[in-house]
Amino acid sequence: MKILMVCLGNICRSPMAHGFMEGLIAKYQLDWTVDSAGTNGFHDGEHPDPRAILEMKKHGLDISKQVSRKIQAQDLESFDLILTMDRQNLNYVKKLGGDRDISEKAHLLLKYANVQNAEEVPDPYYDNRFQESGKLIQIACEQIVQKYL
Ligand code: 4NP
Image 1 (cartoon, rainbow, N blue to C red):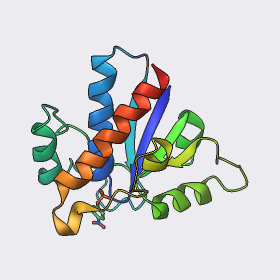
Image 2 (cartoon, rainbow, N blue to C red; image 1 turned 90 degrees about the vertical axis):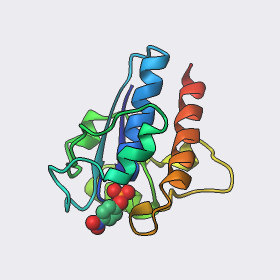
Image 3 (cartoon, rainbow, N blue to C red; image 1 turned 30 degrees about the horizontal axis):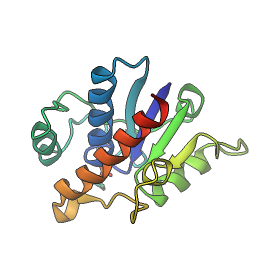
């Protein structure tokens, strides 16, 4: 399975989701791949936000080498599952699909994983709540892996 994690800037939330899923793929030796992308392209070519790198380091995961990129229409073909951090990202992805109905493969990460009491991963870029966002993402990634094991 090929999974694409999507947020706005691809420097905070989706890189953390990318990192958690990469860790689980290695742990369970899954034949899956994961990548991440943003919808605004403002940080193209940049590494993740230092606060996201630090938060992931606490989980023993190194995301420092990831590079931000903007999602492309081609990604909607290449990936089996496109998981977005919030509704704004999901709407963008659906619009990018144009006439094509991608509702089977594009979902809110937290809804797809059925994380209780949360539908969107709050953006920690302005309020620094990386631990809280990271926790929600971690739970979701673990649930997705359990679902397919
Ligand atoms: P992210 O957070 O979508 O979780 O990567 C953001 C990072 C940067 C910006 C917005 C959100 N920005 O507009 O610069």
